[in-house]
Image (cartoon, rainbow, N blue to C red):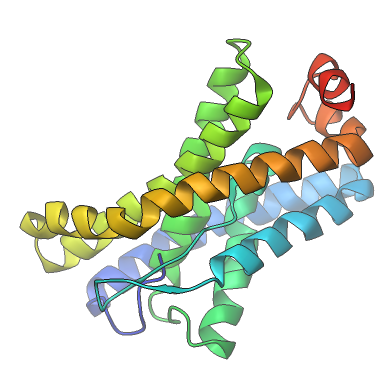
Length: 223
């Protein structure tokens, strides 16, 4: 849900930039500490970042000229590294997309990073951690977390646009975005489930060490 360059008034663009910079600072600190403790996490960081770049680059024209629809790719990073680190990876991806692909924009990068890189991943991470405690099937848990990461992003983007152009426009933004984003969220949920299953088979010990999966869950996946 990349908001296009120049679509937000200066005050709102600056507000989202300021909020996002605080989140990115926290994320960079967390990332530094994590890598210092375990450099073996680097390949999984690279895979998670690649998912964000590739899936979020699949730009689909939106009925709203101010934005576009696409998967977010943040589900894997959200459940594995949490929202702050996901925001850092998303910021890098969004910068290159804005600079090289004219996808999104530099003035709106703060808003886009907050919605796609933090808000969606935050809700996904909270849902994932809550469902983990219920004993729900791990594939359903992963699917729901990835689905929410995508869907929550579009909700926040709609809110960002409506704050800039009038809250009375929120139902309209939500309704129009839903036409493309709900099917994309379902598809993204399925893709992330497949990715988690594959990674658990080849690198299950990391999922166990950072609490993403339990030993029992990894054993069931590998059975």
